[in-house]
Image 1 (tube, rainbow, N blue to C red):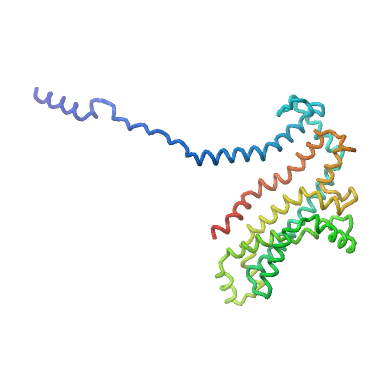
Image 2 (cartoon, helix red, strand yellow):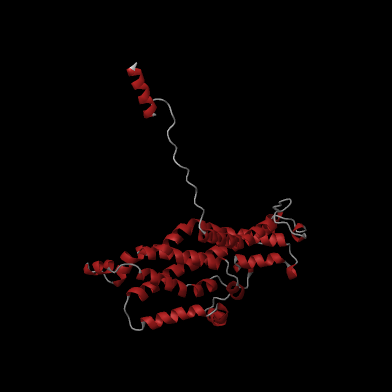
Length: 303
């Protein structure tokens, strides 16, 4: 009798063998996001809408018929998506030749700017010569001069060299880059000096130090210069309009202008379809180069 009573009392106090549920942990309320976080997300959402809104509207209009493009009130989504405008682009202009010209011009400009900016940036950052700061200040001052001011001297120089109405007339003047030189100079200044000192102790000269030590380390910075140059000159319109005359030397932006027709009487859907097609190469370059671009922009801070 006493053993049964003792056993029952043990069950009552232990709580484990009698099957009573364990005590639950108190529920923790989720913290609401701070006002600053909400404000930042709201600002980013507005910026994304302002940036992507025109692109989405261009894509939507390119999928409409010409008559539907002028409906009032306009609808954001096409009622009956139609891809006829994209077929008309290939019928009205030689897309293959225009893309080839743009790729050749833009690719050579990007490679040329990568090479020139790397050499100039290394010289201003690592080499000690007389007038270095003054010359670098003059290079930076050229960034404040718009291309419209220098286009006439450039045109006269190109004509004197016998390169008028050629693709070289678009490539050669664009190879020197003040912004790329500034960017590469800052990148080289962020690299340690120990590498140059160790290479100099081994008997390496300035060119060997640059080629074998610093140039491989500057690849992310060179990639930034190349990507930015490609995106800028792929969409360039003013210089090709002035420096080229023959349609066989037109770049893609000039070819898209012919889609407007005489006095702008062309189909707006066809024009915007051409715009969407012209955006695809730059979008592909950005998608595959965004990681390199991000790493290159943050490399200086990490070093």
